[in-house]
Structure formats: C-alpha cells, structure tokens
Length: 259
Image 1 (spheres, rainbow, N blue to C red):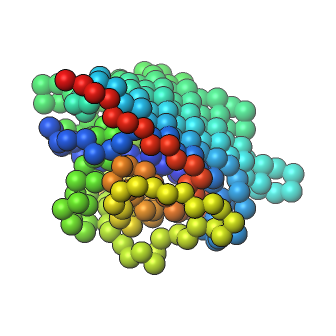
Image 2 (cartoon, rainbow, N blue to C red):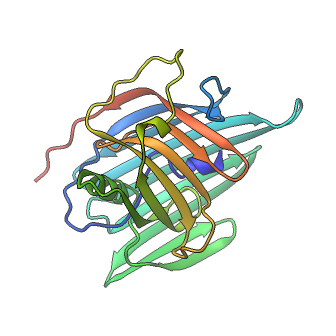
Image 3 (cartoon, rainbow, N blue to C red):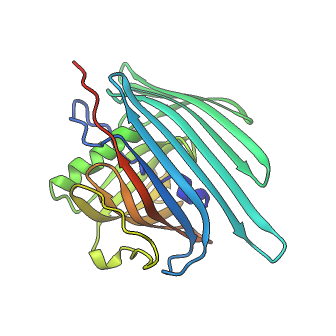
C-alpha cells in the first residue's frame, strides 16, 4: 500500500526547461486490489485530482486502504497529498499526511530551483531538514511531461530523477522501459470500461531512492500511461506485497486560457 502512494499520478522524472506541457488536467478515480489476479479482493480506493490555472498545477491525491493481515488484525492506511507546482518546474509546495492504524504523520515541504541549485526545506515529526538535491531532479508534474516526451520520440528505455513528495521526501531514480502489451494487467470483467482519450504506452518503472544505481529498488510497477498523464491497469510490486489499481471513473478538464 505504501508503494502505491508514490506512483498513482504517477509523477515521474527529469526537468525539461521550456518544454510544452502535455499533461492534461483531470480527475481520476481508482479501485485498489490486493494482488494482481483478475479476481483479487478490493482493499481501497484512490483519487487523483490534477487542476491547472495560469500560475501552475494543483495536485490533490487521496489514497485509502485496509488490508486484513489476520482474521482479527487489519492494516489501515490513509495518505493525502496537496501540492502546488509552478509551470516552470522551479517551485513546489506540498503537504502530505499519512495515517496508519490511527497514527498520523504530517510532512510539509518546499522545493525551489535557483542559481543552478535545487534545495528542499522539509518539516516533519522528525524535525526540520534542509536538502540539496541533484540539479536534474524534476518536480512531479514536470516529470510526467518528460516521460511522455521521451515515449513520443520512441525511446525504449531511459532513467530520470524525480522528487517524491508523498513517500521518501527526497530525490528518486526512476528507470522507465516500454514493455509488451501482454505484460499489462487486464481489467476485471465485472468492471465497467473507462474510455481514456489519446495515445498510450505500456511501461514498467522501477524506483530507487537517491541516485545510486547499485541500491535495490524500493518498488516497481507496470501500467498503461496515456499522453494526458492518466494511468490505468497498474500493478505495483514491492518486497512483500503486490497491489493493483484499476481506473473506475475519469473526468478530463479543459486547459486554461493564459497569455
């Protein structure tokens, strides 16, 4: 469940200054299932609301789940993210809240790019932290644009860096690979199909904290990524659990008219 918090918008990878935004504002609702089987039991829901005005992007993500570990013990999790990201990709402000079995943990952060440096100021229950991030680390929405740009050009595999605001609160290396359609999860027959406009690619991504290529990935996932930034047919594989996410409802929103 924790792994899924980092991927559902899926927000991923390296800042491309001046690139035209391809991500589209939208609201997507998902059903979460424990395991990758077609008949896997439902364990939660997730909502991603991505809005855009002339100043920048506003992302709200809400993940709720409850996993039965034994007949009498359940693991419950609520994860909320509220962030604002400038269109330039140089400034991110966010608030992340996680509630695990009733215990709350709130993190607030600011990430800014200036004078060739990228710095983060983070406040959490552990106290304040000041980080200097790798210069090529991207903000969440800017990273999705980057991935889509690379896929459009036919690049089959590439790495990048993204800032993870809902999990590690640090830079993460993401290795992206186009895969075969047969490797993507199928929609459960009982679920109503959701039509997503635009072009799409079957992809796999693995996430590693920091820039050290030798470290073991925290988790990996496969999904169908659309050129609007919408994900569907998601399967997340972590060390001890597999969680899948199926798109249940989608509302595409118009782009604002700005100078």
